[in-house]
View 1 (cartoon, rainbow, N blue to C red):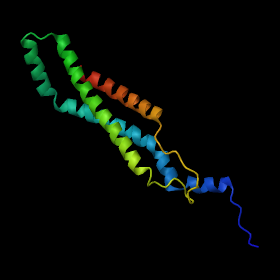
View 2 (tube, rainbow, N blue to C red):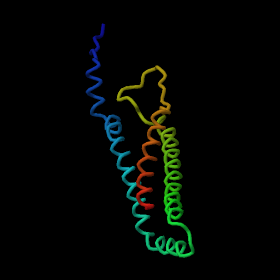
View 3 (cartoon, rainbow, N blue to C red):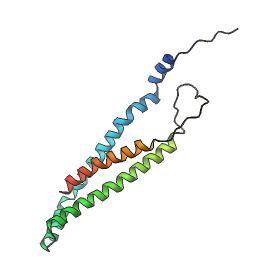
Length: 146
């Protein structure tokens, strides 16, 4: 008769906490926040780089009689359109990357269990992330459009 060591849940938890899988799970929120900050900075840099040409164009339109309010709405609308297109494209690329990577990513430090795992992304989380990103970038684009 062979005696096998008894593994406890705490033993597995200790092994998992020091694994690469746990580290990748711990850094995804800070990485997302940095990506959002990068988007904000890219938007601000693009506005700063084109402010001279935009000012000249807006002045010419103002001289021919276009109302100030119309110019403000068009400038804000332009930045909002860019933000919405970029955000929807980014979220779609993120979901595609998740779908391609999740099947190849080891989730356990021991052989995976025989039970089927539901690895589909949570739709509510995706919608909330999309709304958060759109809110932040839309606020920045409105501020830049003024």
